[in-house]
Length: 190
Image 1 (tube, rainbow, N blue to C red):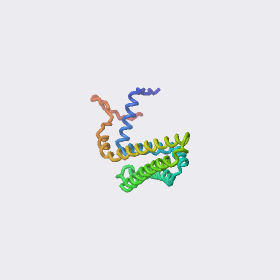
Image 2: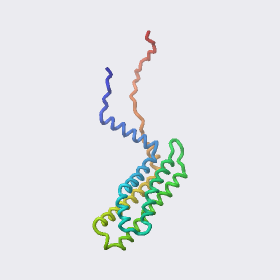
Image 3: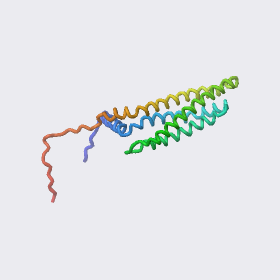
């Protein structure tokens, strides 16, 4: 019977942490990608509130801003994933396209917030109950969306700095070595 080496929970946790750091050392561009992904998911999950806000207020260009935010958020992910191919230099054109699309998302976000302000001032007496809740939820989500995207831009700008810092982390495995290693027998069994 073979004996299975029982590894303690702490050792398994330490090894998974080491593997995670090794993965980050090889692909530090994943950090900003995850931040932008969180912003995209937040916007997608609250899209119902955005749509109900657009329907309640119905100011010119609200639907267009909503569409631009969703479309360019998705397209910017495609550009970002193509900007950092494995085992080759970053694709500058894709990084520029990503930044341009993300800036358009931020500008559309600001435009949508201005439409909400204009619509609330215009239709203030009609916006009560569920409409007011949807509008408040949409405004709060849009602020969070912008904040998370700005944090993603900061992390993208700091990518060269923290990628160097990550490379300095020692992730090598220490192996015990015995000085009394005997000769290895290479005799064949007959």
